[in-house]
Amino acid sequence: MNLRPLRKEDFRAVSNIYAEGVATGIATFETEIPDWPTWDEKYIDSCRIVASIHTNVIGFAVLSQVSKRNVYMGVAEVSVYVSDQQKGRGVGEILLNELIKESEANGFWTLQAGIFSENIASINLHQKCGFRIVGIRKEIGKLNGKWYDNHVLERRSKNIY
Image 1 (cartoon, rainbow, N blue to C red):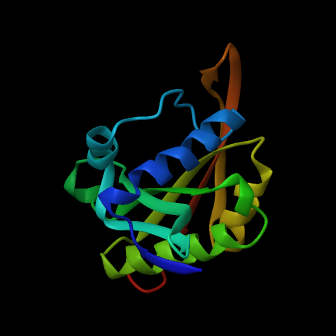
Image 2 (cartoon, rainbow, N blue to C red):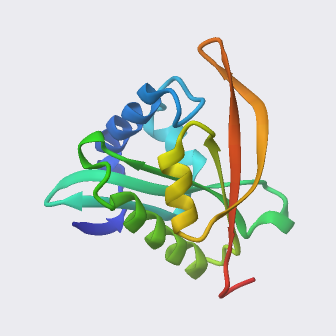
């Protein structure tokens, strides 16, 4: 497995993996797969990573800005997605740990994640990588007629903070 920066050419594979996450109903409140310009605008340029085997992208990890206010410039939200065929093989952990390193190299001191309470695998992954649960947002969003809670997790950098 190789890790490298995500490129525009990876978007087809990335959007397919994201679509698998959307289909689970517990990975995102999004219901549509964005086009490249929308996706590209949403995520921070400096912290975009893909995992690949040969030329096949099998997962990705990215950061999005939490706020445009200067005081929060070192705080970002984490997104990690792994293809269905590769789940349970440690790809998510490798991606998340690399994203943490990349985020610190780019001045981020706090990473946060909002994870569906039903998504136990993702909560466990984040905790394994040094995130802690800071709360639960009850019925924070409605998807397909059902209200969902989100676990809120964060990780503070020991190198920057």
